[in-house]
Image (cartoon, rainbow, N blue to C red; front, side, top):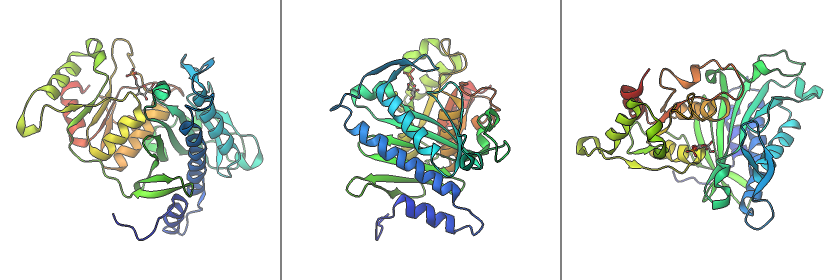
Length: 335
Ligand code: P6P
């Protein structure tokens, strides 16, 4: 798409808001706040090799995972920005045991809450592989004027108002979806702005890439093993054998899947009977994005976004990507 001028994310969100006279601009303002947090995290990620910010923080999070210093920085940056936003009543984070209600009167009267994985794939930080921030925005269900409650954070994914990710890769991009569609913005460092680079993203209905940690095959179900064999069998009509790509960073694997088509899978297995990836701040936001782009996301027995969460950090199996590839894997693993 040849654009006459750079359109910044701020300009774009304002243009989107103007399409709806009744829109208050609060959601757009919240997206801009998250974009600011992404720029601040990006600054640290880009120099991680040069300052004492790589390496372990010496603590572990609720997941029992060793926290990397950049994890902590990203988490604190997002909390700090959203706490002083005019549109966020509170947050939930992979790095925090419980949700955090912002107590000031402005926040208590805000109608949105944000969930995030502040730095997904952080085990890749030390090897300079792509990492990312994943976020999900809901309209709160608790009473305005009072602190938000856990009920605001365990809504099903089909109640999301917006979702997105920031990928710190060969370039830094923010991709977010609303019900209007999916758009991608690339950070232009010389002006410090995210600029529209991928308008109206659509996930191809078919793909030739399957993305899974194949090292776990021995722990997978028979149906999953059969599907992996299907991916590896030659079949010119179906374009097989497919290519296998797995970065081990969900944001990076999902960004490729969104743009080029394919399927990303983290199934339940003997080690992770409920799957490994988290529902509320990894799978649901990615499901919202991929389905807004025409793809599909299932846990194997139904739509990811129809799951009624029972706890903040619960996990789910995930099969997500090109619609026809997800339908095919369901023939093998569908509950
Ligand atoms: P495994 C990173 O730790 C993460 O949460 C996702 O970003 C990634 O897709 C997955 O775990 C990788 O898990 O078990 O293959 O190392």
